[in-house]
Image 1 (cartoon, one colour):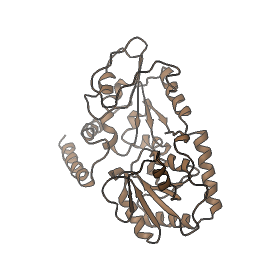
Image 2: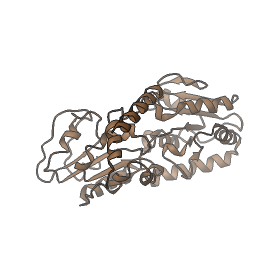
Image 3: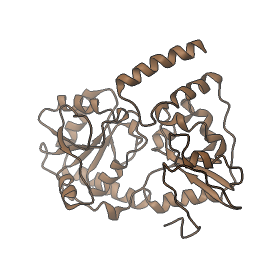
Length: 332
């Protein structure tokens, strides 16, 4: 809608095949698919585009999620990276450092009308409820939720989503949050907990903020040092459980203050107007920097990890792939 108010826009499905042939002045914006034969990956190679912009989630510490985009990046003028600021600040310390010249940071956004306020007060201290909303993909790190639940046996931590059972969490199944039933379900909780190890910036954090729940997350979920979002450390279940226990007993006034901060942040920053304005800036910019230098060893690693699922693999499969990759790199 926001782009259509300025430009003629044609939409194609993420997994479409074929090639778009550009007319003079055309701009291509796309979310790359892992399959090489898909439409954005093929179309971006056409030479006549005025601009080519890649827009997709970004996590620099898990090449399984991002390496597959490496072959298309040289054809893109800019990479609009959807991620929390935590990850964008990590780029220069990562194996994606040579991508940095082309990258521009985009925070996610939501429409608050789609996620109405469901909580204006909290359960009494000591009786508060926590929930995780999401899948059991490896980068979601749900084993850590099991470790937290084991340290908080008298605290309810529930799970809304699909996947293999998460031991220690109360399973509630999948929910449609646009329905009265789904909203009634989530309205019974005080906190959202998500403990990703390599999660770009889960939309559930912004959705929880809109509903009035207080988000609790690892920095590796993309949000670190953000006022209104409570961080717990990665790989320290005792310390993380202590933070959850303190929140369970915190004065209501403290939680209401966090809630107000989050609502202000949604109104002032995490908006589609801001998001669209950044995309428009990229469309109308003339920036097209070259990628940085890439050592051969890094190029080989990207070629290997680019063959793996961009959404992560089961841990056992991942470890086998790691061992195989190390052997291949040692020979090369």
